[in-house]
Picture 1 (cartoon, rainbow, N blue to C red):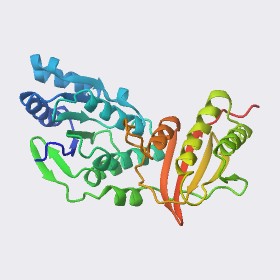
Picture 2 (cartoon, helix red, strand yellow):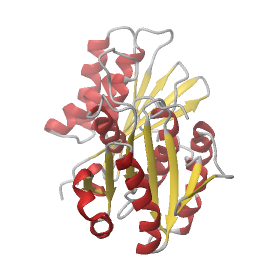
Picture 3 (spheres, rainbow, N blue to C red):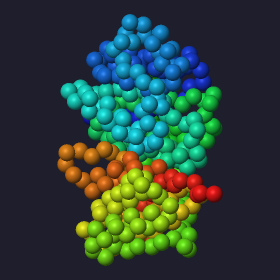
Picture 4 (cartoon, helix red, strand yellow):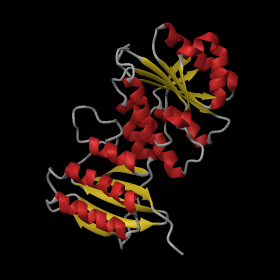
Length: 309
């Protein structure tokens, strides 16, 4: 096996014993190979794993799964940061239970798309990852998609290819719901070559839509990063801004095709076009990257304060 390959496996379990039959051999094998091991799961599962490992548990990094981010971009950043903590190790192991509790349908969609995107975003990192799914608490559609987002499935120590695996771009196109068109009263702005003027206009319009203070400036900066990243290319980015219950939304229409996973990987020392998207993903409550009729649509969401009564 290529030591730099990213191995992404899913595991559906229905109880403590079934979880341990997968987790303990995975962790033990990593320890025997002197590979760093991170276990990010529920508090109950952490306790069970510690008890099963005994004295070996002190060699494992543990964390409650919610602490590793409740949004896809935070999750990817946490995995990447753990890998960077061990630059001299050829491979690291991560057992990472996804976070589903309290997620809206839109957030579930984003998380499943992230699970699929990991196969591309973490390629070449040397990470071996298992994602456990508890069938007792997970909705059936989420459990069913495990086989679509993971190239391999694990049951105990048995590893098999997933017959239902879907390539990441195809999965996102199939899974992601169509974006509704902006409302007729959306404010539209078109970039005409002066990035400073465009950024100023975005600030004014987001303020008019009800964003205040720091949130207004941060969201405007996120939109400006997306526009600025395309400002040097051919064509003109166009922006549409509008308010809807509980949030302000912005569409940025870019005249170029983009990778739907752009900006999921944290920036490196070498600047790339995706760095601005990474910042925007950190700032925004939700961000979609979708192919459009003549380029790409980037839709950004941020919460807005409740209207005064």
